[in-house]
Image (tube, rainbow, N blue to C red; front, side, top):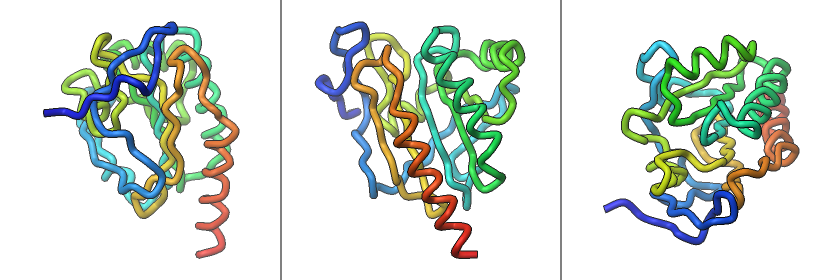
Amino acid sequence: MAYERTDAVTLGGNPVTLIGPELRVGDKAPDFAVLTNDRRKAQLTDYKNKTCIITTVPSLDTGVCDLQTKLLNEEASNMGEDVAVLTISVDLPFAQARWSKESNVDAITILSDHFDLSFGTAYGTYMKEHRLECRAVFVINQEGIIEYVEYVSEVTDHPDYESALHVVKELINKAGTAK
């Protein structure tokens, strides 16, 4: 039976139930299976040896999700090839492809968890009452360890972009000095 958390986040001020574990810094990042915009399977292992920023949004067709994804697309264009930026929602792959084209988002990867909520249940972002992802940010290092986690307490609010991007920049600098 899936682990349920009822005190983690609200949506419009109303508590929602999150399905899955509450991940923490230091945890091994769980693998998952989601779909690309052309309906191919994608997994965390596809981004092996990269620093990954993974954000979840309820729907790309809402204001905060739209702004969040565009901002991360802009940031991603300056991060280099050793960083993968993924945005995951339960929007259908067709809708994600349309949104990406209309929004000129091409520096990040948009993925759909619509099929079986593999990501949502592995990362504890699946909002049971709405069959949507809550807003969250995860930064995973090149060894697959979580370095930053934020489950945004009110889903309609923006995440702390500055803190997440600071961790990413530290990881990039650390990887650069190790080469």
